[in-house]
Image (tube, rainbow, N blue to C red; front, side, top):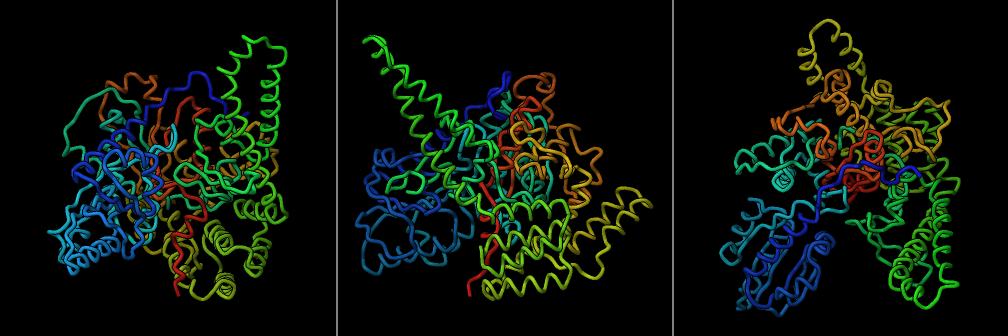
Length: 617
């Protein structure tokens, strides 16, 4: 198997500390409202809260009843109401209406709003405008990071992507900076920070300002290098179909906050089961990074091993049987339960994914990535749209075609757009405007030779001038330059070569050997070169904004082979896919280091595109 734990792997920091810190702070805030109280929780905070402080813990601190925020009149009879919410104006207006309704009814209650991860000035302004600022107390629960697994940390802010990259709303930048500051204060300082992207630069600046303002504590660092990367640096990777086991589970069943709900078709019963997917699940931890084609073989072998372990009972005397029941039986039963669930999930995925449709879909994606048979790909996409197979999948293929071809020819763009709107509704016009704004789906303009012009200019003038010219060009239109990048970084392996998915030779295995994720390739190259030197052409094609900063802890640099130096923190701003996480785990094993992924949220093609939908008629 490709991903068993290797010897000499550096030990990972204990991220359960972050959970304890968050839980202690929440309890402190709840106790500031003494006595019995009802707690109203934002819907998207329900799952993260359950990972930090479950119902039992909340009840121990005098929380009487729990309600989900639904923006409608409430039925609570309590005299104390506590609201645990994201800082959203709509929710604050709803709370203001409740307070004002109580005033009209002559009812006196105490109200406390706990904003997480931080409160924004706009929310306090709403309370003031609604005339309830003096009636409520407000606080912040600095719940910046939720550890989803040993090497995955999430800010659980799916709105970060749309707010920052589409709306240009930078309010979450300080949140990401605060998350880095929290990691540094708990786990020690970073010796080197690399990054690429406009948002990455802003997050770095925000974090640096926070560090200058706060007290400096020197302690032994637990990881030394940090890499910040914007999602818009690489849109191709999240738009590709995932084929590693964990990615497929996310695409089909939606992993939410580290757990997944398997329906009756998986559980072989009439009820659904919620399962935590992390390294504690022995079966899952061995197959999560595997290409799906290898999973069944592993699961059947695992089933045989389990049967052998059970068969040991035969011929045991009383004493041996007693020891077996005490030491092994419980573990075997748990493993058996998990094994049957993963076999059920695999069978369910096989039914959906081995259809002719899926094979054709993968073939089209691979052709787009390689730049072959583009006309056939367009015909396939047209058929996909006209058959109304899937609104999101059709949009995904259109975006993949546009990015890989650096925009669509005018006749193709207009024809495909018209067919899509006829199939899925004219209200998607706004969605097309959003995709165009982000450079995901574009029509090639008449003066499309900018990149050629840039390269000619580059030979005549120095790099600095070219950088300024590049900025000017990129402000006119954000081009993907995927073909040139792919060639420069060897992202697409030569099509004639045989690729053995059981023994992967590079990160391309996460896409069946067809494509190495651009984001992961950049990380590999920068770590190899210890900076961006020699990658000027690549960064120019990615619209620049790259940086590499030394943190100045020379003593830690001297211990270049300690565990801390072999642990790299990668922060994805705008979301990260499970395929990228699997690719980084593979890269870590190859390089003898470990990657810890921090992301604003886990994403995939559906989540990414759903965030950009504007189809309210």
